[in-house]
Amino acid sequence: MARVYVTSARFGDEGSWRLLGVTILLVVLLTINTLYSAYQESIDAWWESGREFRESRGARRAGICVSWLVQMYLALRLCSGPDIEQKKSLC
Image 1 (spheres, rainbow, N blue to C red):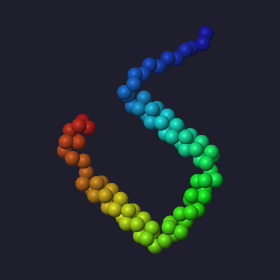
Image 2: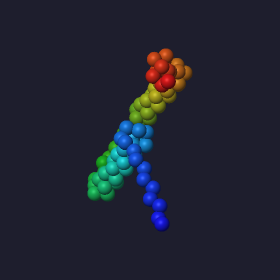
Image 3: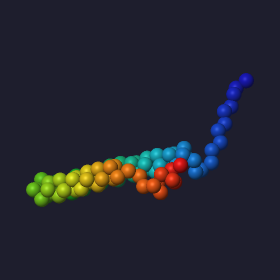
């Protein structure tokens, strides 16, 4: 006799949110892939037109500044630790 396994879940638990997130991510990636396949030549031409700016000194300097700001924010956020109110809500 064959066994039948049934699971029941309700929306709101961790697994359902994870499934929803992965499904949305998959839909976004498939949409990007489809759009890129349809408009590949125009996207490549647009990307090549911006090569001079991307290789310029100003763009490199802006990238370094943004990277530095993100790193400083993360370091401060990690060093400060969670607030007391956050600890109460996690318990």
